[in-house]
Amino acid sequence: MSKAEILAKLEGDDWMDEGALTSAEKSLIEQRVTDFEKQPETSIPWSEAETRLKARYGE
Image (cartoon, rainbow, N blue to C red):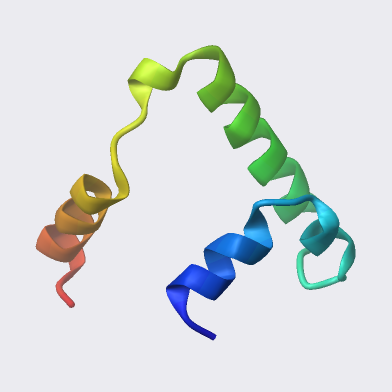
């Protein structure tokens, strides 16, 4: 599955009911989305996050 397909699938909430995630994982995602909605200025673009992760952990 391509990145675009994964992102398209995540746009709705249906994927959360497919059983692929634990309840704890679903709660964590919901909390992170809520946090982002309350304070979007605290987030960074994926390109920056990816760069930081690669610098820290390598490719």
